[in-house]
Amino acid sequence: MGTAARSVIIGVPAEVVWAAIRDFANPRAYASGVLSCTVEGSGVGAVRTMALPGGAEFKEELRALNDAARTLSYSIIQSPRPIADHEADFAVRDAGEGRCEVTWSCRFRAVGVPEAEMEETYGRIFEGGLAELKKNVEG
Image (cartoon, rainbow, N blue to C red; front, side, top):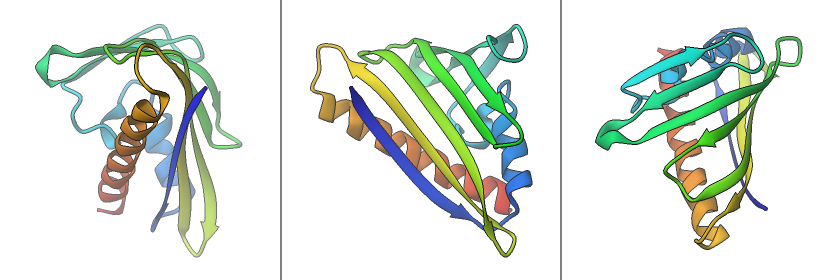
């Protein structure tokens, strides 16, 4: 199994950041390249379909949402990327003094490409997404 994880400290309270992440229907706080996002269902089991520039489309299923722990898990169930058995997690933790730490991680199986290549790809996606999230919530 391949893995990737990135974390960032954000200078606003955890509740503010969690509100942006937990909105499964609106990933734009951390995914600025999303042209559109539609959701079928609600709560755990909901599936969002995101369209990206160039015609790429991803379907992701919400697997777990825990407001008390500020964690969210989802799986990519359809993707143009060569992966299978994908599961990703967001975790938002209080870092004191009005700050929080956000960790975005995933596990997957690479299909037909080196695992390290997909680990790099997801690392870059997470770095960019966390930088976007930080910019959006810190104002």
